[in-house]
Length: 423
Ligand SMILES: Nc1nc2c(c(=O)[nH]1)N[C@H]1C(S)=C(S)[C@@H](COP(=O)(O)O)O[C@H]1N2
Ligand SMILES: [Mo]
Image (cartoon, rainbow, N blue to C red; front, top):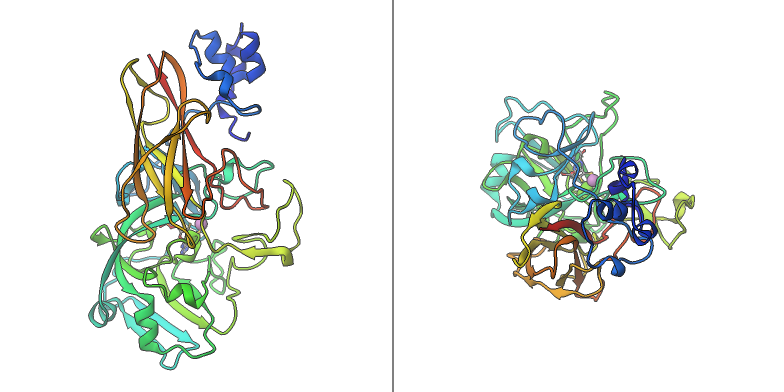
């Protein structure tokens, strides 16, 4: 089991662990030595350890952001602690940031000055301002999840380089814009159109203007999905600067990398796009299962299209306390990429031995996350973990630990676990 943070620096405290606690690992030993019982300890699957306390937010927050955990500052990357994702619609200040390059200068940008080009395999190449988009097409507002393909990377062993996202490279907001489909219909797709290539105004870290920070694309069928939009607003306001102001793509259900921020161009291609971070091992996983640590040749890697079934516990906050006899309301969200919907969510307080089905609220539209709620009443004082497990309409459920290892640590949809103390 990968998440061993509970153990960090704690060994010295576990002076007199019980034999059973010793067998279970030092996290359990700590609680045992502090006199905290762990009622379901005998149910903890072999090899699994107790959940760590949430990371504390640190460092100075950029303007407009609050409470996020900074993973890096050049490029700037920040994830959201799960308990700050409790809202049904993630406020801009809590929306995670994943940047590959340096954000553009957007001072003095207006609806007239920002231009979007649509070219390549189209009958009529277009150059439109945001004002043109607003005028010419029907605006739509959809509640859509953005999740980084690398969310959960921190838990793979051996680990992968890159941002060590834990659970919070995800958010769900109301995005307003126009359908890519409507714009493509105006441009007139040629029969040769098979893929998109996306470009944004941010610059490569090296400062080299001939290089893109990132330029990903999707199959034409995905771009033509009515839920794929070109958005200028998030939660009824301008998109926050670090999330792509003034214009971004939303390709929900696919890895977040397909949702280009600071959008300036959609190149319609007659082949699979080969832009920055499309090739090699970027946003790709092996075509077949591999043993952890395997070196996989480039030609055996495939592009990630579907994001898997997943859920997150947003309340209570991990590490919180509750009184014996009181029921604990467990709350969170579940979501799923292409090819399936969320079917159910179950929660457990006995390390996965028994499960209680949660109530699942309907989704306002496809690719939104859905609220789940369940009540659990721990039988005695002590340390508990609450686990959540979502299942999709194909019967696929979240694994208890990391799913199939892959070289860059993508699409980890393991169950989210929180710690609760009953006093
Ligand atoms: N122009 C541009 N768009 C981008 C990126 C970027 O670095 N530059 N990062 C992508 C990645 S990898 C992800 S996961 C999402 C993150 O969206 P957010 O920063 O709004 O949360 O944006 C995508 N769009
Ligand atoms: Mo990402």
